[in-house]
Image 1 (cartoon, rainbow, N blue to C red):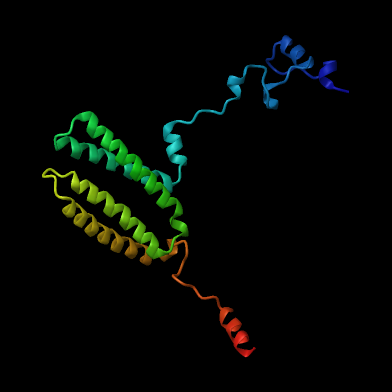
Image 2: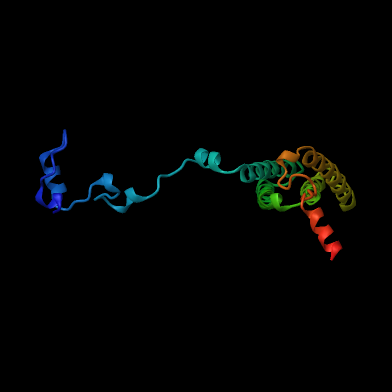
Length: 194
């Protein structure tokens, strides 16, 4: 028999007598996973911005922070070169969004890339960003000078990335560049014998 229907459940300490009667007549208790109040209490607890940032992986937070810094630097550089505040802010916002999307995508897929491909991708993103920033310079350099600066920054970042990825092999997703399986040599001998 149901204990709630017969009311033979003992009263809890400090509980008003009406609460026991309510429990015995089919009201669901909050500690059992439900409540009698509205759906507002069922909503997931809100996380603060700091909580969300702490829980986000580094492959998301670092590119976003770098993109925000890049966007702010773009705003400052464009504004100091004579652009109006709204135009500089729009340009900085576009720069931050584009580099943020590219950075998060690169950081997400870097574990599936070979070392050289990953270094090329980092070099290309950095070189293109620096070449574009160079084009915003005070004397408004030519397109050729901006492209040359971007290519120089590409090679610098490519070499630094390649050095870092090669010297920190324990952090590499692929380990050694081309590991050989010990039983692969035995297979080749079997194929050669047939």
